[in-house]
Amino acid sequence: MRESHTTELLLKARSGDSGAQASLMEAVYDELRRMARHQMQKEGSNHTLQPTALVHEAFLRLVQSESIEFQDRAHFFAIAALVMRRILVDHARGRKALKRGGQAQKLQLDEVIVYTEAHSPEILALDEALEQLEKLDPRKSRIVEMRFFGGLPEAEIAAALGISLRTVQREWCFARAWLLDAIAS
Image (cartoon, rainbow, N blue to C red; front, side, top):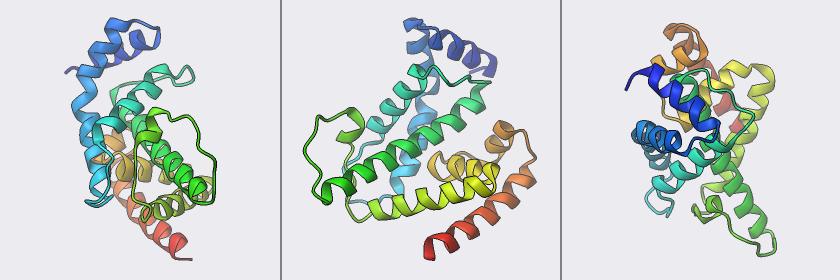
């Protein structure tokens, strides 16, 4: 699909055009599902989260957000990676709170997503490390989000951030090493 067509659909969908929302979902669904499957491969075989649920929750948040101004298709997928990260982290935090005696509450779509308890601490540790990296170098943090949570190829990350492919590769390498050190500490 033409990038300009996707961008047009993004603008129309944000203005509330339900037909454009349906067309946009059709245009980006396969790529969002690929991103979600990529993320779910990291979770091991004993989870019950379905990539479809993650895709739908992320899409709803993206289309309903009034604060996001999508520049183009690449920007949309970069933000989608961030939204998927937030859904996963929110869920891990919810699991941690329940484990500590949190009260039962009304379930929302992202709370239906169930992870093994073994992965919740890892997701939270990564999120905390990413927040630290964000303070030191926001661009490296965005690269990690798009690559790790979104599964985006380096070329798409470069396009979304407006930097060279080599810069993405170099900063990904640095950020990965930095995060491993931060999580191990």
